[in-house]
Length: 274
Ligand code: MF3
Ligand code: CO
Ligand code: CO
Image (cartoon, rainbow, N blue to C red; front, side, top):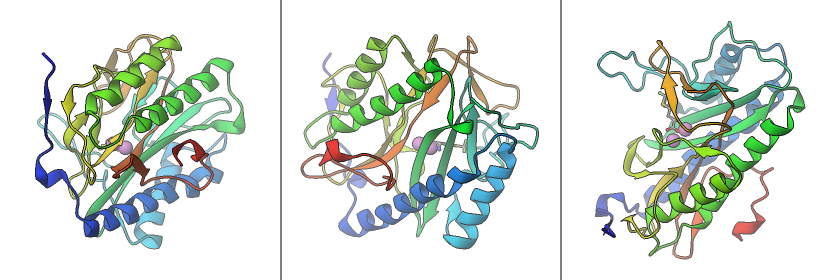
């Protein structure tokens, strides 16, 4: 019943690989900082995508990992640099010239860059025009706090199930729900690697954490039901009840004492992790 297992050794990064993960993580975080002043009422999500693309390619000399990613039988590859998920869009929103942001929208930008072969993956919420409803504000706050609580559960000897358990407990105590169909993931030279990091579940289950592992924690939190559906474009994921959804994502490294946030931004208050 209480199923736990050891991490395969290929998931344990060497000091050299960890340094490359730090660089990739920093670059991904810098994109989210860079784009912030461009997020204004009247701008299209495609304009934001173009700015991020050009910054990653021309300034960072890095590769946008999502561009051309994820083709599958019956699904085209993703054709953009960032995912732009507005209001009831849960994740994988496709940037579009027709999607014009308006005051009070909540926008998630998810960016993944590849530098020197290693991936950095992070996302955050932006409030368009700086003000939104009390509900939307609280939803964004809870999604971020859920991610932080998940990160706090990370240390050698803990289990991956501990992360999901604390996230689910917290989110449901706030009377919101946790999306089940999408999860965090191991990351390195591979974009979506083992382990799957569920944002719900049971303590003391799953892969045992070891220093040198890198993975994302990226809870999607819904105001209504947790169920989602995918639109006809085969990418855009929306809430089944069309209520709001929010997400935050960091790429983290398991350290000998806890976790290091590889995609930390300068303006984030991370004092609780010191
Ligand atoms: N960045 C997303 C994640 O957090 C994956 C996006 S895949 C894409 O794992 F193809 F939609 F861009
Ligand atoms: Co991710
Ligand atoms: Co991401």
